[in-house]
Length: 175
Image (cartoon, rainbow, N blue to C red):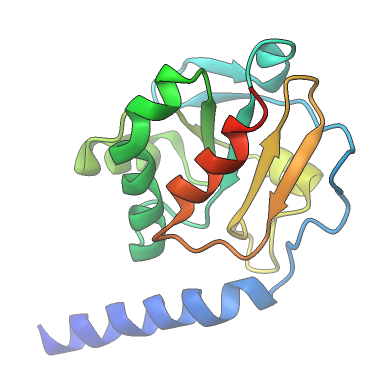
């Protein structure tokens, strides 16, 4: 049991300290540029396209490294716990990772997540957004997209414990 705890601690520290330095910093996109459109499926096969929300809703597009890891769980559960205020204000939240649909489905089930998590298992969208790191995982970066499809903000230094409140405060200004 102690070995498992030590291995878990190692992977947590590794992901916390090193993933940000392994590339995937979204330097190809800037505030004011058009957000690249995408169509991805969630764990249940429903398709989501960024362009579906153009002229309608601000969209929070957040990329996360790996379903079920401590930081990703904290980040997703923060959105889950704040979901009512996002929904009531017409703010769309789409989480994206390179995880398989089955891994995302288990993540949703394990944590009773109530918003769309999309699979970019081909890694094409992650590459287009410039968030794919050298380890083949997404770097934790969030894009706030306005109703016109333009990037209103990019959060490169995400604090998973305050992420939900941080993105809500930025997105509500775009209503």
